[in-house]
Length: 284
Figure 1 (cartoon, one colour):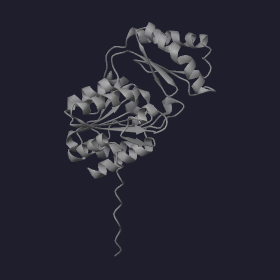
Figure 2: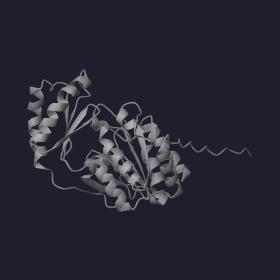
Figure 3: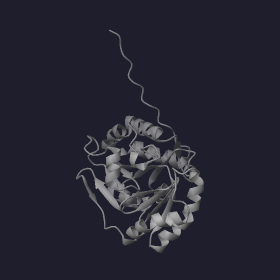
Figure 4: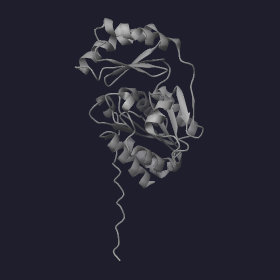
């Protein structure tokens, strides 16, 4: 009877920095004390022209379900509302993901798979005021055509990706939107062809550091793709300076050089991130 070769374990890419190699080694040595934290859009899901059409990469949920039982915790840290990320990710009711946590709105909201409940504070009044003012504001700027307003509950985002010249329109609206946000006690967070107006005081770094302390992590892996992930990168760098091991992954190595330059390992988008997570699960 012919024997069938075992499927080959996918290779686990090696980080390019000493700190990253130390982070990966610590994760592999004691996975039960490791936190795996991941951005959603651009990291677990491809970037698409309409954010409402974004869905997790087909391999993302299987990879996370294989990985989650082997580590201290898996968390998705996103600017989206937590419930939206859960729905677009397909994270609810998945065997293996019973203890997944989604930190939405940069950590202001939280969804726990174990309860299926989203907890969140009240929406600040400044968000409602900005939401009402934005259509006329964009028209006055001459930027109404080609821009798109995304309602995010605790925040509102202006996208320029659909404009004839997304970069030019982005540069036109970026400064004025920052002034509008400031006038209403909000901050303006730029990303790839998007400016998000949201309350201050919470970002992915604050959320990640607090959750790492909550789960008693000894090592943390964070993967992101955009400017909103820089605070999470900074949080991991601070945790490393305090003695914790850390590994920083950049999804999409050429799109946001500010992130790629600080990453320990650059991966070519969500497919490569999912491949890394699958290989990591195999190793564990």
